[in-house]
Amino acid sequence: MGMSVGGGKGKVKSDINVTPLVDVVLVLLIIFMVVTPMLQKGRAVQLPETINPDGLPEDENELLVSVEYRGEGNKVGAWLDTKEVSLSDLEALLIETYQRNPSKRVVLKGDRRLTYGDVKDVMMAVNKAGFGGVSIVAEKKGVPGV
Image 1 (cartoon, rainbow, N blue to C red):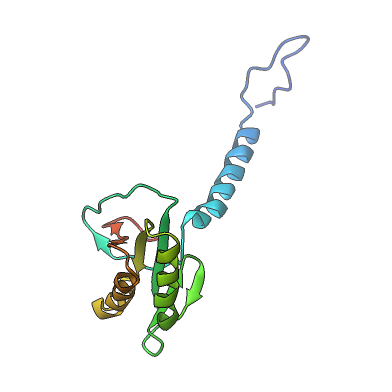
Image 2: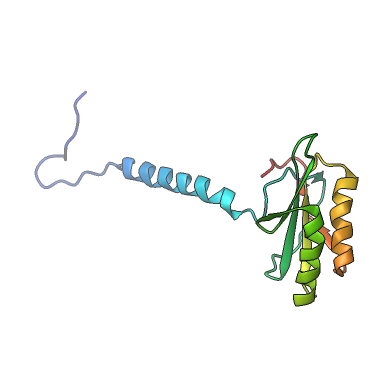
């Protein structure tokens, strides 16, 4: 079997060159693999699962509170957007935020490995600050975690 280099005098080669296509697809794949983890807001936690979670619209006027599991000894860590705070400071920061903008919506991301009591403490701090309610983030059952 021989290799065709162009088909002779003045003839056009009609074979498709797949190499540039593969190069572009691989570059796009790498870009998406790098950017996708950055799309998540707040601290990465293992979210609880539910069969049919209600979707909330993305809102610029939301305050994200994350509660992460840190193991048995130091069990709970709290994050206000991207800033780590202690549970005692969290309530004061929430009160300050409520005074500046009482229309903010609070969204809570609680780690599934925490007990209800651990997450309840954060919900109580949100309530004491004056916010009307808390939206809790969950992922759909069967969808791999973030």
